[in-house]
Amino acid sequence: HIDEKYDVAISTAIGGYLDYFVVDDVKSGEAAKTLLRDRKQGVGSFICLDKMMKNEVYAKAPFHMPAHGLQNIHRLYDLIDFVDPKYKNTFYFALRDTLVADNIDDAQKVAFQGKTRYRVVTLKGEIIEISGTMSGGGTYQSKGKMNLKNAMATSKRNTIVDPVKKGQLERRVKEDEKTLADLMVKRQQLNSDLAQLKHKLDDERRNYNQYKNELNNMPQHIDALKAAVEKQRKLLESKTVNVNARQKYDDEVNEAKQQFDEATKEAEELKAVVDR
Image 1 (cartoon, one colour):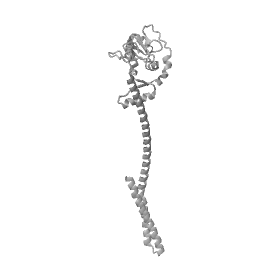
Image 2 (image 1 turned 135 degrees about the vertical axis):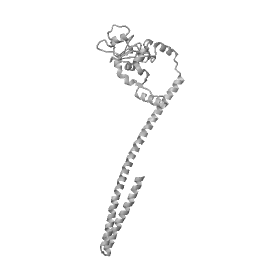
Image 3 (image 1 turned 90 degrees about the vertical axis):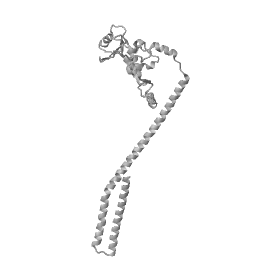
Image 4 (image 1 turned 120 degrees about the vertical axis):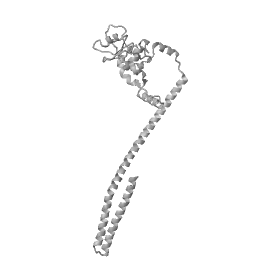
């Protein structure tokens, strides 16, 4: 929490980060997103505490206030009283070394003085960015996004933890965790089934193309067999042969006719497969 004097300043400087949900890690964030989606509670943005550890060295490092000769210039981060220190890195991530000044004149003097530029916000919510751009200062003021010291003290006195409700919430969390685990297993099984179906579909497509090619080539094969039959027939008619020779030619004709019949039957079967 922070003194109410800086309510507008910090609500403006920290922006939308105060609307984020803070979770322990990425896994918790994913579970929370799934829970919101399953219960149709909209979407949310999350900050993972484990990802904020990289800011710890900067948050703990001593900050040297620029020499400005002005009063009431502070680093916003230093004005926050943390009930739980584990959130310090998160607030430093959102604020960095943003300074707060009473008014825009003081803010400009601090922001552009010296070699190092600073991001500065005024008590009215006017912001001077490091790049030099300015924003805010209109009729609308962002405020009330952080607990104020006076309100926090009253809230602590009036807050009572309902053990029954706490137990219900804990059971609900466990149930949701189990549901999530079951859904992940089901999802894995569905992905496996999908992969098998895709493989089977590829096989069917290859078989279809093979049958289609064979069917397209079948007329040429049939024509060749017809030509062979006709050749044998003419050969029989043009020659005078003895009984043994005639029997030989008859056998050749019958064999050619049998091949023709088999080819015709195979073509019909392939056509039936392709038509399916």
